[in-house]
Image (cartoon, rainbow, N blue to C red; front, side):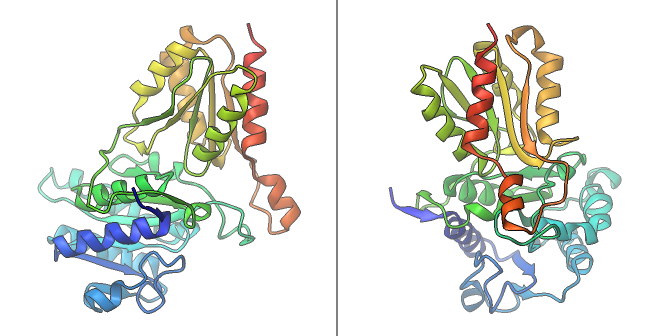
Length: 326
């Protein structure tokens, strides 16, 4: 199978869906002539024109509100917000409108729209452009939250998001845009709420999201040299969450490490830990370990940002700590 980048996989999903369905429109800042800040929408303006690829003013509340209205009246809008940090200026549109319209009108209206954005430190873009608060949206009833970890997931989950009748927060990762992986040329959909076991193992379960899935797989290979058998689970969607796959894995391994780049306090790692503590505590042979970002703003200083981030080495240390329990 051919290999393409995460960025190109997203672009291909958008293009294929737009060819199939004229109701799909894309809105955002600099998505037209510039092709989006990470080039995900590159070339789409030339192919579909300014009526379907719409460069918006710098007004997130305005164009997210426009997308909610368009979705309610039969369109299928896809909005791009440059960084997840900027969703804070349109939270009312997301939390009180996008997420709740279907419920508040007794199911008579739907909001089939996608809000694409991204998370992640590591590019030296400081505290207002580097945050990872995808857990905010998993907390809100009515929203689907997708978290693609590879080019294959990026295309399949975005295709599902665009064709799904629910409002979707589609959370990409900055450090993944240039990574490559196998992706089918034809259109395909990955169902929401179905995790994937990326690597099977018997000793430790790592539940990882976004770029940390790759780090978890690297740690698993390193652990294998010490005869530690690590299972790696990618939830794919944070809401709905496939807790059955996670609990089944814990029943087998008895040890849980959760790796997520949100801040540790009240983050996604805390939710996974709570689920296992409530529903799988008697399977556990060791305390749950959470590897998450510090409860501080993301530093601009390169050495401090490097210290803020974590990867294979931190995960490997946590795996060894878990294995120290009998």
